[in-house]
Length: 295
Length: 315
Image 1 (cartoon, chains in turn green, brown):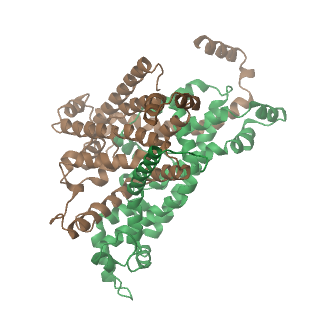
Image 2: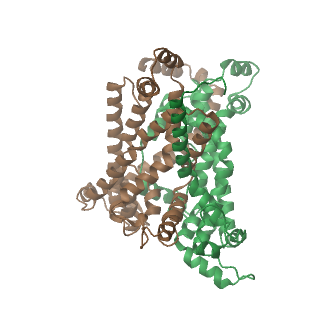
Image 3: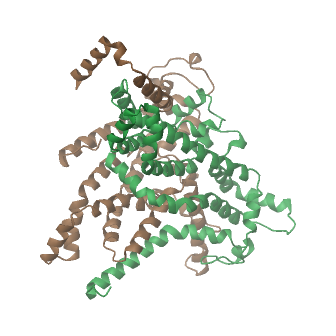
């Protein structure tokens, strides 16, 4: 620091800049913090006093009540399953497609590539998509969550661009040793592409975790509801659910308010994203930049 | 390009045995499952466009539906609500375009920040809203702004600035601005990353030369940083023009309520309402077809413009 000689004008600028960005930071983060402290506050305390800086009457009972709500634990499992399976399936089919599209020996490569690119600009629209998914009999099946995203052309291009920069000598020497395309893909290209695959995986996983439209439109079976959708239902019906919890009369006579219920369920849905966020943020700059290069 | 393909094809035809090696079969076999998924889930729904030409209702088979030609397109064009819906769509989209200059400013001033660790932290934290669903955004908004228990109203009531709670989520007059603000809040930090990278890639020697010439901070920002990030800005702006008609469905679905409905019915929401709430599949499909065609035209137009002014296409 001593080496840096800053004039007073520079200090004024830096400190003003610091204040502005701290305010922006608060605008971004405070809403999350507010919900967090609500979920740890006693509902009676938080209805009497304004909880704005720290939890009042710290309690974990809100979470106990929320996890006892019918459907929530199952929805959590469904959301985890769709996230994990959806990501694995998408990585497999997108990366194998990227690899084959890179090979000049692939019969019809050009036309396959063009058809893939064109699909990025064609958006069928909600209703045609809805009817066609029903025609495929994907409504009320778990497959609806994981199959439609199996091949993301955008990710295919990201992976393909990355694979094209893997030195071809590696592949050629494997060919010399008699390795076929499948072996080269699975033993050489996949391990070497881990940086791009990791970036694609975290983006796909967050996308899967956050998707709920398919659930809203095409799933009537309550057992297949995702956490996001359950949250939406709870947000819309919190008064009713809070009343039910009250009537159910638990041992301690605990009363969860509709507001505390909403806040706690929101935290349950948000916490997984917050937990993986430090891992994601290592990749998102590279992910966005890969996308920007393509754009 | 063309002759090359036909030559290789004719070689393939003449030496069929040589062309169809085991390797080529393997590659094709590896590519096909993915390609079939692409056809099923990217092009399958496009074939669903056929429902715009038939008197079709959900649950029917297409063979039971009567062919109506362009009838439903005429209905779509004469829909009394469509002008209002388009106005909402474009108004919110144009307000949302503000996020680009804001993100550029954000990146410029953040890159001037002296404390690098704090800079990194701001960058990370401001991106978080991008990674949560609109349902969570709705819940956050409810927590802060709801009239009964929202933080804003409780504080304002307590200190006596207002006597009746405000309800920005149900304010018709401010509905466009409120939704655009949420949209900007969610995406600002994420958009800034691209600008931030564009600034980082500006040649440092330019700054050093400017220092030698005695240029101040704002001179350098105006004459070095801004021109340096201009190409990125133009590309993003033109890409956004291609999606002017797409505000998305989820945001408007979760924030919809009767008081703001007339202002928040954007095209993506309206298509849902006509198709699924009113069960008028052909008209909703006609809207979707028109929307896709117009969007592609806008994108191609933007691409042409980009070739003219920035000398490079965006596609």
